[in-house]
Length: 577
Ligand code: FES
Ligand code: MG
Image (cartoon, rainbow, N blue to C red; front, top):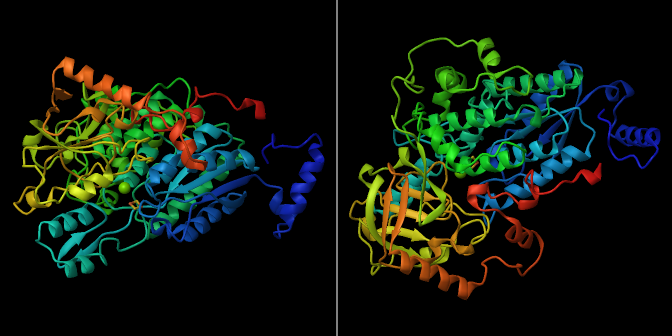
């Protein structure tokens, strides 16, 4: 059992007391006289993505017991995308604090963190990186399988958006919407496309904190349970060996660069950019920036044919050999000497993993990519001095990657909801929709409202894509010519705040440029006026509780939207011993 827990002076008494209490749960001395593997339980009645949690915990326990250690599950909070108002991102940092503090508080020798739904894995990785007390293994719940609607294969949640867009355009009636809702989420598990959950699962494997081969097996498969058992075994081996392989020992800049390579190659969620920045921010000396994503992107084509950039689903990626096949194809672009949680390097792990060659069209070799250019691009310009993101592989109307159009400005998510479908909205297919004040501070939690709907009057005329710009996020399952994470955000006086109806905006993905074309003098004057009327932007926030903490301490998107006091350079808690 790990030393260093609070003892108030009498070490032996503390041990005696802990043992006496845990015996209340029926444990024998034989059971307690073993290394302990904690299992983080993020099941919740409000988290259908994690509904296989009981079976996974059983399987992890089996692996731990087979390897002679004692498994002890414990809960942390659970976040589901659809049941975490105002947005799960608002609660990600809270979950990371819960994870960090429970890892530090309890007597563990290793831990298996079971997560999956979008923000849960980033929160666990952030927490584990900050706690850094024991070897930590990420286990994901696995993706859901696909359903079938009137002969068409469907799955959450690119197809949810597709059907709703058709409904808005008058092509699908409300009865059909009710029918398809039975098939879009046909099993437990995380969204079956390359959304945030799938992306973070793949990145966890690439970073070496999840076992190789563990990201893609469906949530309801027997393979998923064997992966859970195996993860339990690996954690128990680390615990028995007294492994010193805590997250900070192997999560290096190389691990993050490998993760970004995989992110680009899978056409992963834009959210993963914010999450990787936040995880890296918890570790000193890594200094990851948006520029790293663009630089690595320029040499990494899209290799995986999954929605929303492609056509297929996670179970197809699994059948095609999963992340292991992808990593094998990416070998020339990876740091194979990056260490993993097992103590081996990524290259050594890959060498040990059997990979058979058979025809499949899901993971393509570097010589025959799905999309030759980089999936995620970082843009800057006078409208986003600290950068913003576009997933160009998911742009539906390719003409829009270079575009100049007049701004149609919405001042908030509520303003958007009130006016987007108004018959008199001054908009056409060349317009640029601008949504202000949905950044980390502005609409606390930076909601996924960046995926603005096509105005009804355009949708009915067959317009499927239009340039959209905001300081918010969009779901990893969404597609379109959508510029996100504009930093600094409008609510703290970023230039997005001063865009006005009718201004011309230029988007040029190739040139990595986002420009508000109003002339330097006018631009400076508007920003100065904004400052005069708003003060410094973020002063002390009225209110109480977590919302106050959040608004006062959240960092901008280009810094990962973590809390300033949680980053590696945000201070030290070493006085706690
Ligand atoms: Fe949980 Fe999509 S809602 S992963
Ligand atoms: Mg999502």
